[in-house]
Length: 402
Image 1 (tube, rainbow, N blue to C red):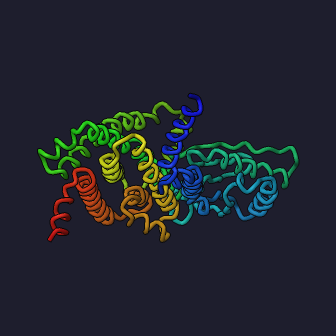
Image 2 (cartoon, rainbow, N blue to C red):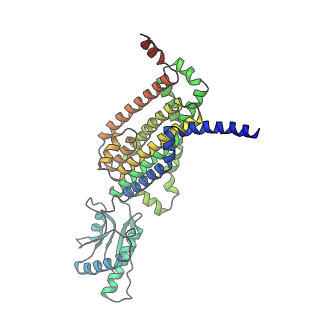
Image 3 (cartoon, rainbow, N blue to C red):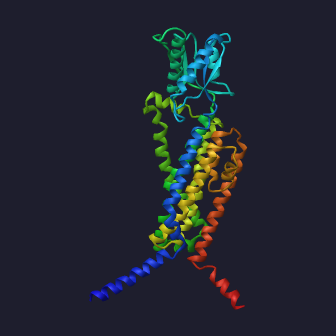
């Protein structure tokens, strides 16, 4: 009995193995870890690029008389020799006092020409240092520069006593826009990835219970798909409202330093940005859920759902990689392509809202994305009608018979 039992078991195993391996999606399954790691690296590098978008324009400014500038410049060269590339402070810019030094220092934070991280003014033994929220290290570096310059000019034991003030910057900055653009892209991607997959299981379950066929016999199939899409969106909206309320109140529970760093985030379009962000989340969710509805309608088992969902998930990571790169490089051709491709367009356009002040491209983007929601739903409904309900078969047979 044992050889016969093993022979039957091996026959079943060979059947299942062949059914799994001899499919095009199995190759994607084999490569999925590599692809996801690659897309994760791309997303991480894009996030770093977005965070460092304004670093090239960030400077440290010292407003001192011409006679003290050489000593500060020499101290800056000496201190920078101990920094690695990753920990180096922004470039030092020296300016001569022009009237009221305090007013001159505060005006530098609102300048469009530079992005001042910290500004020093006053006598070097008791300087005043203004710094942005989150730029505490830059302020300490300016204080160390003042001490080093005093020691070089007078005696080794001399030390500067600096006063610090953190100021709230009203003008939007390049780095703040880049970080806001990347965070917006990541938020839309993450929430959409978590919520859009719900439509697959619900559709596959109703197909296995024959409920979808009953609904399709009562109302047009496109109405069934669109109604299910709206129903899934309702539950997703409750999820977003719950967590959005918590995140909106998070700065009140954070330490003052971290809350100040969050306040440095800025967007180009101004107060309308939250509405645009919600709108692009809606379009991203509708697009992805429409695709997953089509997958759920064609898959009859959990195994088929997993095999069909894997390529879509990998495709989502690819779209996120494009959009996150666009967030850090808003003027590149990749950004333009990400804004045009329907499935990356919501994320890329949310990043554009943070980086660019123009509003008219967003009206075009919403119309373009809405068109693709309708196209995706129509294709999914027709695939279900022809592949599952077999509605198109009689016409083809009749035409062939003629």
